[in-house]
Length: 201
Image (cartoon, rainbow, N blue to C red; front, side, top):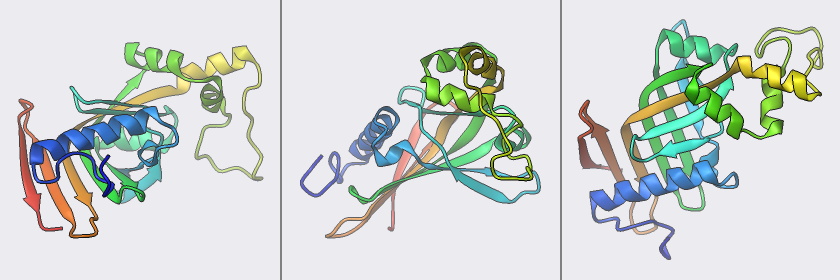
C-alpha cells in the first residue's frame, strides 16, 4: 500500500482491478480487515431492498466468486430463491476505499461446496446453525431460543448450513483521495471478458 493509502497505480484501470481483487482477498482472510464484514443486499419478496452485514468467507479472483454463509431457514434464502440478484458494499475508512459488487447469488445446501465450507468452519460458527426455533421467527421474550451446547447437537446443525456464492458481474471502485477522488466501473460479459471505464466521482 502506498503512502497515500492506495493500492497499485491509480492511473491504470488494469491496476485498479488488481488492487480491488487484492483487498477483497485480504478481507476474506483477515477477520480484522474492514472488508471482512460488508453490507449484503437482496430483494424482498415484495420487491423491497433489504440489507444486512455478513461475514465474507472467501473471494476467488479467478472465478470472481464471493462466498458467505447463512442459515437455510433464514429469510434471505427465500429472497435469493425468488430473485438471485444481489449486491455487496465494502468500505475501508483507513484506505478511504469503497467497492460495490453486483451479481447473481447461488445457494449451496447439502452439496459438496457447502460440506467443504462446513468442515472449514470454526466450532463457534457452527453453533449458530443449531438455533431453535429458526432465525427471524417471532418470540415472546428476548431469550426464548436455544443454541446447541454439545457436539452431537452442533453437528446436527449442518442440515441448516448454506453457502452463498455470488459471481461478481459488476464492480464499482471509489477512492476518496486527498488530491482528488477516483472512480471506476468494471463489467464482465457471459464469456468473462471485462470492460472497464473511468467514472466521474
